[in-house]
Image 1 (cartoon, one colour):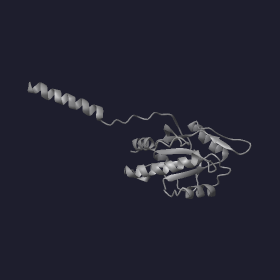
Image 2 (tube, rainbow, N blue to C red; image 1 turned 90 degrees about the horizontal axis):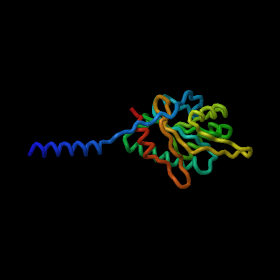
Image 3 (cartoon, helix red, strand yellow; image 1 turned 60 degrees about the horizontal axis):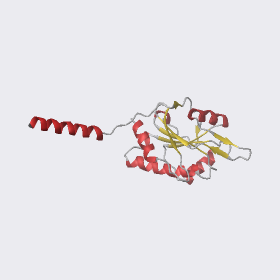
Image 4 (cartoon, rainbow, N blue to C red; image 1 turned 120 degrees about the vertical axis):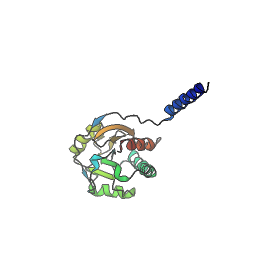
Length: 192
């Protein structure tokens, strides 16, 4: 009788442990970034390609989505710090979709406006053609009309250390913040 009780307790314990054991779901392969032709505006691009990164597309004249997203990403950095994940382990990359207006100087001012000084937070700029080609890797769409008003999709992307796109997340909107906990989970999962 004792053997049956011990066996039952063992099986129940094993079953509970199985249900509660944290499981990381493998992030899917969505696509890949074949070339990084864009230039980092402050020259801080050391080894960013061989680390997980969050890639977002912005423009400095954006009235709502981009600045709200930047504020949320500041919170992402704080969450990663709280989890004990060093800034050397991942990158946050912002790519301007308006390189004609967003010069290196304007992007530097934008960083200053948000008090971004971390070396793992990079801002990239290229020519119109380079930016368009780069955005195609992500299926990210943007368009500038005749009046110069720019519209864009509101997705950000998790890219692993092999430059494979592994997840996408929504940027901030008026009604919804960035899912920074989930982004932190995805980055943490890809950090080796």
